[in-house]
Length: 283
Image (cartoon, rainbow, N blue to C red):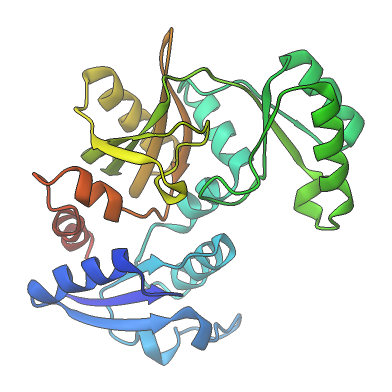
């Protein structure tokens, strides 16, 4: 397989993948998205993608993930993940709509476009509630609003930041969880491996220092991962769940996810090797 490996930074995750691909004898063409121009009217892809059987989109920035996938699809270059999946997962509103439409349990969410509308939504949820940016990862700019005064202050700051997306207020109920959440890496809805991420802080992301442990996938989680994957269009995904008194809830599906912590947490599974297994089936 000749694989176009599209990236913006080579982290430990990318090194693990590149090593696994080369160990299998695949011809890997590394393409730094920062160095490539994509023509709107050209019928063929940039020379860097000449002859590739599959492109693997490992860009970090959500905008690059979305547009690289869209351009490659336009050029008839097979790309993982597909543009539809990349766009749905990169936008929390689209992701929530997809999960709700598919009947996947997910935290109650409201979206408002003014501070007054957002405060009304916060009051309906009660305090604490959670305010999230509509794009982003690693728990950045996520705020737990414990009081109405806190909500007023944070919302005012967001309104004056200037960017349009900061004026789209995505508000969720606060879900009491047992100090941890669950990340499942899945390929077309089939789990590869899973871990818990625990922290004394209410944000438990591994990228924010959360402690990780292997998680044994129970039937309910397996079913929800399959349903969530299908809801966003399938592909190689990180599905995030929380445990509640009423069962599990899916709070996010990620199209480009890190897995080095998962690889360390589940030593019985060679995660990059399993990813390459799946990539081989896509070419």
